[in-house]
Length: 520
Image (cartoon, rainbow, N blue to C red; front, side):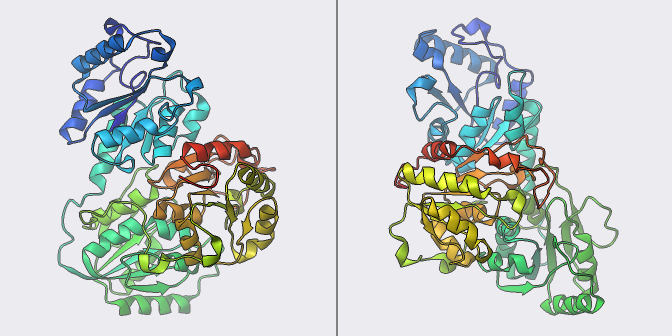
């Protein structure tokens, strides 16, 4: 647990060097003690430009910190940036240096840390390090910072409540009962949906002898990349697909027979927060599967044996992991809850791409509302090339016209040249990926490659942003398309991304420690 100091732990007194002015925020001591009791290590991560400006001395600052510990209890580490903005250091938030340093001090990695702060700089520093950021707004927090944050809480105690709830949610409260010989897991929809369910599928695989995955045609290529899957059944589900065919009774009878032939002891139905698991649960019952688990806010009657509920806002990988836990499964020790790909599938890459260390620019998306406008992507490619980056422009077969246009401004055009596994191999050797909210962003997360996220806010960033990988978010989080879930842009001019400054992408790469030429 990493915590900002001023405005988060104690009342914000500008450039305070006086211990007598330290006032904890309401409920801080009890909240911190709950974290300590749960076994979490705590560090304070704070910008203190007053040192650089001479407003107080290091001795005075340490006296303030001693008073904070007197009132709030001991912290395991204090990490301080003593610089001002003009110093352009790597430690002043929103740069991620302090977050990385705090993680090392606590004996862990940034991806296993949660950072709580009161302004956008705190959250941005967490994301750029690959940590989770929680914003607790105060009167000085700007509205655009609140809109851009993936996770907000009303106050510090509320943030702690949810942190501890999420920690508990991914741990099984009871075993699944009889040993699971064959588990049927379900994740329909697109490649990105399947990829973010990967940690939960690995958890089920750890407790079952055999795992069969039911997915749709749009997610099949991603299903082939997931560890822990022994067999794949591909079948469209008309209550899930965005452009469904009419329900065909004979097709449904065929699906029931196919599911029944699996011989599953248990089925775990993974869905997105806006989808229903109940239509498939009915078919699974008709297929004779005796134990079914799913997330459902709607009353399921006798369709579910495990009816799980998840609050709004939980990242999709954690949402799925919590369902796996409710069904009695957890990741084995040593398997971090991050996205992963099968090594045997993504090993190696095309020999004609040169050395690793390039920047992948992926302008397209299956949902046009989440694609980068071609003229913006073209300017980004030109600016990245001028800054010394080697750029590979990727896209599917139906995006060749766009990738050719973008690459003509600077970069190598790979549009239509790879399947999803081939794209994963290219992404794995990149220094960073510049991409919208679409499948390649999750490929990057699975490869541990930093992401510059051109994120259209049609869906919540906190649920669908790149998971546990260093990320810089770019785009207007307050745009009118926010939370519409629109597949096609509902606002003329695509305002959430049309005003992206290409120089901001270069700055984002610099924050992610990706220099010109792609080196990190």
